[in-house]
Each structure stands twice: as structure tokens, then as C-alpha cells.
Length: 125
View 1: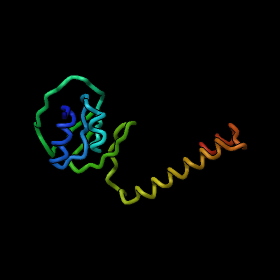
View 2 (view 1 turned 30 degrees about the horizontal axis):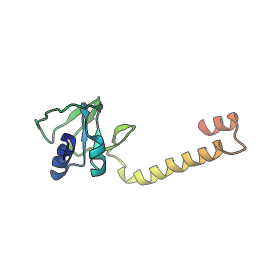
View 3 (view 1 turned 135 degrees about the vertical axis):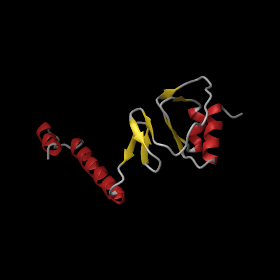
View 4 (view 1 turned 90 degrees about the horizontal axis):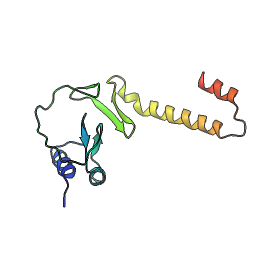
């Protein structure tokens, strides 16, 4: 049988939503995860809560992050950020650069030539 969080996620998906950003707690994470519906909340809760939709397409602040309709958000288990609007077309290139730099640093750290001095040079370039 369906659980409350699963019901809510299904309703939001049917309305075109891909996730929930909230400054409250959520439940039924194990049931919602396979639905590919994203939760970004302050915690987990076991109890049932009631919700109602008060406003839509209006600016909000969640845990100090100001969010407006049309903002691009990125989140994972580490947290949630708002992606700046300018130069978004550069995101794939910039992402590749960061991943390459981190991979090169890890390769050095795991190498036989690793030293504290060498690490310092790589981190303060």
C-alpha cells in the first residue's frame, strides 16, 4: 500500500514536479527514492503531516536560500544550491574542468611521489 510521502510525491509528479524543496522534514524516503522524485529537506520524520498549497510561482526562502520561479537548483545528499543565471552554457565545460583537476590531484596524492610540499604547491597555485 502507498505511504503518505509516496502519495505526495506522486501527486507532485503528476503536476509536473521533479522534487520538493522544504524547510521541514519528509518521510517515506525508501518508497520515494525509486520514483526518482527528489527530496531536499531539513530532516526525516516518522509521523504524518498535513500540507496545503498556499501559493505557487512565488519567491520563497528555504533555510536561508532565496529561490524564485525559474531558478535552476542543484542538490544532492550534500545540500542544495542555486545555479547562477549567467554563463549557464559554460556549466558542462566547467564541470569537466573541476572533475579533471580533482582526478589529477587524487592521482598525485595516491602516487609514490606524494609529499606535503608537493601537495601545498598544487593547492596554492
